[in-house]
Length: 116
Image (cartoon, rainbow, N blue to C red):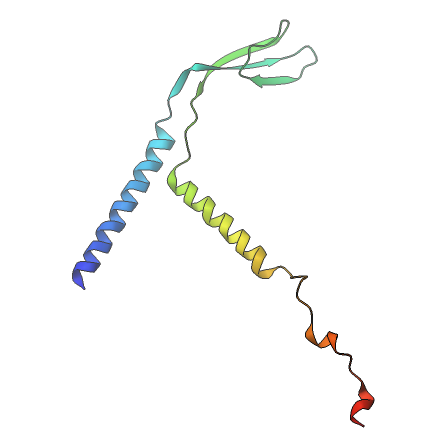
């Protein structure tokens, strides 16, 4: 019994440590991708644009910045999103009215004079 409890505690600490490290690594160590350049500019009509393609001729207030490379979200966020998705699906399945079910008593007409 004690060995099983120790194994459960060690596994819980290991999983928690991994999830914490994954969260830290993916949220604080984002690196700039040198191949991605983002452009911000205003066109002649005054509309602001954000794009990864260079702005057209005549654009005003052109600003460039390096972009971040895409990384997967932390495992904790993926697990949370899957849990929320499962909850919504089950809630919809369990608590929505089912149109296929029929009331069994409505199939047999009730005649009050039958028992008189």
